[in-house]
Length: 257
Image 1: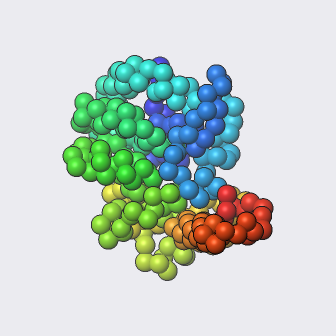
Image 2 (image 1 turned 60 degrees about the vertical axis):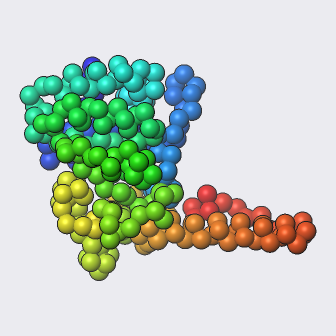
Image 3 (image 1 turned 90 degrees about the horizontal axis):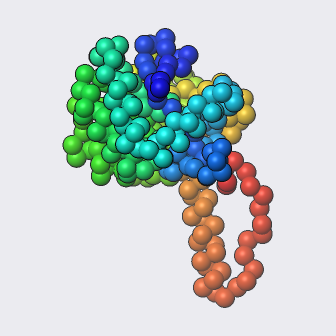
């Protein structure tokens, strides 16, 4: 079984990758899943929910990966260790999740065991699972694992760019330069080993860029959080006053979903 592959962008850099289906969906057996439980606005402009990632053969391969993890995590770990035992992975880079994220404690623990058992392979990841990493990774990080916390998730408010290595998605390269951040567009590895903080130019996908509306993902997420807080405050105020006339219903928009 081949678990690690190289997508077109990472192949140019000699980087291997492990993929899960992005965000939420349904497996062929009818089970629902969410591989990105801390996703926020990123789910509305995720490159892995567009293009080749939607091809039936690609979707089926990613869902097969997830099914193996869910149904036989020890078997998945053995298979991953066997694959990584080949000489081509010595001193190689593996990106964990070019789609998906560390969706559970047991899953991230299994990856940490794999990293410890294959110290000559270098692993890296973007993640929005900040709380899990604070608890399970940061206290004793593997020496062969690099990660960056990416904005656009429900745990953005827990990040401190003065302390944490962070990445944000900008409208374009000019916006990255103007903010004084450092683009990773020349190599995905710059996200974890280049200068920080890290700026990522938005993918040139028209409907995604329209939703982003020129904002950084951190700004987009903050605006969504503020709008939700305002609605909750109105509801609480109405409940406290005994009023049953809350704000009129609104149709969902990218900023309120």
